[in-house]
Amino acid sequence: MGILEGRAAIVTGGGRGIGRGHCLQLAGQGASVIVNDVDIDEARKVATEISEKGGKAGVNDSDISSREGAQALVQQCVDEFGAIHACVNNAGNVRDRSFLKMSDEEFDAVMQVHLYGTFRVGQESALRFREQGGGSIVNTVSAAHFGNFGQTNYAGAKGAIASMTYTWATELSRYGIRVNAISPSGTTRMSQTFRSGGKVVEQPFVDPNQNGAFVAFLCSDEAGWITGQIFGTGSGRVQIVEQPRYGTALYLEDLPVDEIVKHFQRVFGTRLENFGLMKPPYAFYDGVKPPEAK
Figure 1 (tube, rainbow, N blue to C red):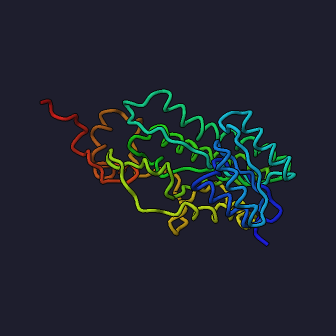
Figure 2 (figure 1 turned 45 degrees about the horizontal axis):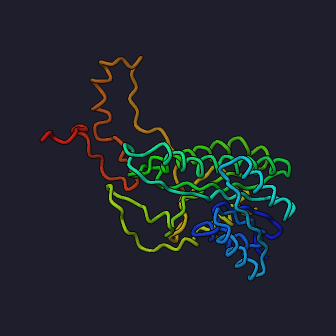
């Protein structure tokens, strides 16, 4: 008997990589799973793998970025398994391009899947959870939302999902609905685009299946006291992602400009935040300057 026996779950983007690992772990803990993926053949492979191990799984290729697709996915879970108890928003894509070169189409393509897909599938699931008296939503963010070269669209979407996670947890707890997120690690087709300093960086293999066990835990009653949290997962660790918070402050009455000029460097001169995914030391205390003219 697993910790999800008798439960039903949906996983978006469940046909490959990290999503596949989620599906297998959820099913391994007793959940019936709808495997959603735009590639229905890959979804079928995962469902077959679950069935061969004695589990229950269905497949779905709805476009989760659309309202109709989100509704169809949730409805299929209810129709096939009688209810829905967990929603795992995992589907994603990348269209990497530096900010000054990124097109509207590249920006919108990523926002549609990550941001709108998470919003719509999460909302449709939460409406069912409210009727049933509870449920669990697990969203997916990324360390890219700390800032990563060439990923304005992806980083922006993941930062928005983190903020939505905190907001949904605040609003939905009164209905017995828990909302958390993971920032997973794993070698997938998407991770092949990782850049540092503007260059694609080859990374060591990280098993994408290592994230699923924690997702199964978050979907279970064992985690019934956990909401509004984001965790880094995979690579042999579970790590809390700290929420944004206020730090060093300058207090001045009315904050007049001349007083800000007078005191700002004294207070913040060595305390500006290191930014970007790899958090290099702050490099601009002497000014942010363009290259010297040739």
